[in-house]
Amino acid sequence: MKTSILILAAGLGTRIKSQKPKVLQELCQKSMILHILKKAFALSDDVSVVLSHQKERVEKEILEYFPKTQILEQDLQNYPGTAGALSGFEPKNERVLILCGDMPLVEQTSLEALLSNNAKLNLAVFKARDPKSYGRVVIKNDSVEKIVEFKDANTQEKEINTCNAGVYVIDSRLLKELLPLIDNNNAAKEYYLTDIVKLAKEKDVMIKAVFVDEDEFMGINDKFEL
Image (cartoon, rainbow, N blue to C red; front, side, top):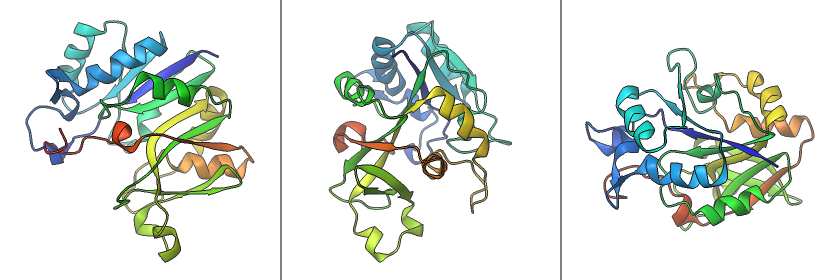
């Protein structure tokens, strides 16, 4: 089954405390976004990146090394949030792999393992050494039941150490069906991609939890983590 890949890279990355965009911060003398693009193009010929903050600067570097990348711009004013980033995305293939631009350590073999599952919606999860404020993933009968944001979790749910890695594989038709149903009825008034799990459950879609390595799928939030 052919896969389209979408990389979310529109965030400000304020915790990096740098004039340089977060995804252009270097790891082993190469921008974070270039690490993930190399792995993406090894898996697909349809790769898109969603940008916003300093779009022209990031776009220039991406296209210099990966000229076949499709560049999309997120309308942060009208469609903020991780689901808002998908508002202009049109996948060419039967399914979509959604990645984050600040995960330079993800191995290609791990992504291949994630893609080897045939469920209509696959969610990358990991056992956190310190769950902190990660969203908790509730699993029942080998299917993801829900994602609970830390601030909304009850005492029992906070004991769960299975956490959302923020990486998804989803059937393209299912994505097209569910994306318009996501609303911004939350405190931040943003469109959250995590809501797609709740919507899929309402349609009795089985959601497969795929366990991955925490160190690989850890997003880079500040210079210390680099």
